[in-house]
Amino acid sequence: MNAPLIAIVGRPNVGKSTFFNRVLSERQAIVDAQEGITRDRLYGTMDWTGYFLRFVDTGGYIPEDVDIFNAAVREQAELALGEADMVLFMVDGHESPTASDITLAQFIRETGKPCLVAVNKCDSLKDDPNRNAFFELGFDNLMPLSALNGRLTGDLLDEIVDILGLKESDRFEDESKTVRLAVVGMPNVGKSSLTNALLKREQSIVTPIAGTTRDSIDSHLKWHGKDFTLVDTAGLRKLSKVTDKIEFYSTVRSQKAIDQCDVALVLVDADKGFGKQDKAIVDHVIEKGKGLILIVNKWDLISKKTNTMKEFADEIRYQFRALNHYPIIFISADTHQRIHKVLEVADQVFERSRQILSARELNDYLRQFIRRSPPPAEKGKVIKLKYLAQVHRAPAVFAFYTNYPRLIKTHYKRHIENSLRAAFDLEGIPTRISFRKS
Image 1: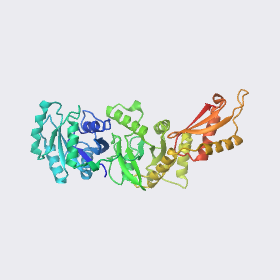
Image 2: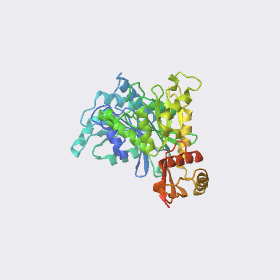
Image 3: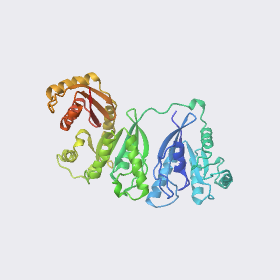
Image 4: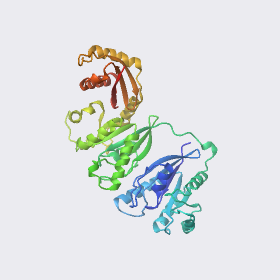
């Protein structure tokens, strides 16, 4: 069976993200004393005594607020409730039930989903009676909890397993490896729009306001029988321009998403072109050894002639020569133009990143290469390339064994890398060339 999904809902600042981070044992959601930090749905899976449970963290629910963000956050929370197997309704044990709590309680009852009320901020035994005030919400299952220090978290997870009716036969192995795709780029280039278009649902909040997405949001989809995890991230700007601490944490999350992905989808705004910050993001992805696809979004806004696409791609590659080795796709997330290519090319790049080339085919290639382009003598020394092996993947590291590794010049190394890429179709994946003493 699939892991049951538990939606964590409640009004702002009751501790939903703190609890989410605690059960996942990592700081996945940004937590701050400021209200309204979480906006989108955040998913995470954890193992509790052999049962895999999926939690979805939601933004603070504020009924009937017309603010553009609060309305979108409310919609995200309602979507989470709709897809959940169970609701974890979190309230603040330091306060009495509010009008928002009562309205949300009524909405949860109308869903018909099993519900557990977690009375948070009960940091010690003397706080436990605070839960009694919340019986007026009309639910039978109420438990005190401290998400901050972990008090009674295990008891609450045991209660969730009981409410879901999980049995011994429901214990199962962890999910198989999925392809992680990080959707990264500068603010407002269309990362959330692309994520929603690929998922065919409103997973991430989209507004014209730069910086709408704050957390890195995992979403799962199947494509031709393969499992993908799409990670929508916050926009990346130069750190010197980041003054708000929430944006700083968002930037850290985005960089972590790159570190943990298999392939990075780097989005560029077609109208603004390829700039210095786009180059810095591409540099970071290549430095981390991740597969990379450059995606030029908002292509529907560009007036076109016969060779507009080719000229645009040539200009990008002229500005940044490293992109000669990476695919460039032109799309419109709004009109869904060519978005089918994104997963198709991402799957190809991922498969290339997993391959290990055999010693036989590498050394057949090496012999032919030396015949065409023998290494030039240096300081009166005859350099011999004796053996070639791939010693690592993701990134692909190729070790050349030679008699004088330190005498090989940079231009010859570059020539070898270009030749190697052409011979073995390494488009989209970073490569490293290492010369070692034989």
